Amino acid sequence: MRQTGEPNSSMTGVIGAVFALLLVGGIVALEAYYYQAEDDENARKVVAIGSDELAQARAQQLVQIHSYRWIDQKAGVASIPIDAAMELVVRDGVRAAPAPAPTPVPAAAASISSPKKGT
Image (cartoon, rainbow, N blue to C red; front, top):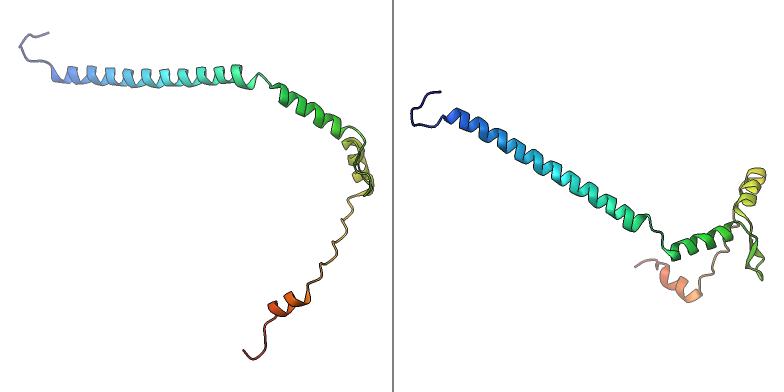
């Protein structure tokens, strides 16, 4: 190499660009590692540990969908196990619910809501 006292600007630029690319690549790699570690910790501490309330609620729901019980005994509404309900639907098909009875409109409300002729 020659020794002229002036720095080689093209070599300095290349070295600077290489180091800048390495720096950016290192930052991206560290960021990816951080987010992966954060997700692992979240899964270990939060997701993997089921709360007792959640387990109890799921157990109650399983009991409810797999047992016979009255919903409203006076109205004759009962709950049957989900497997039996699916068999009934497959065997008999889905029946349409009866249409609700129309609600009567009071005379005072009917006269207010109907438009008058000639005005």
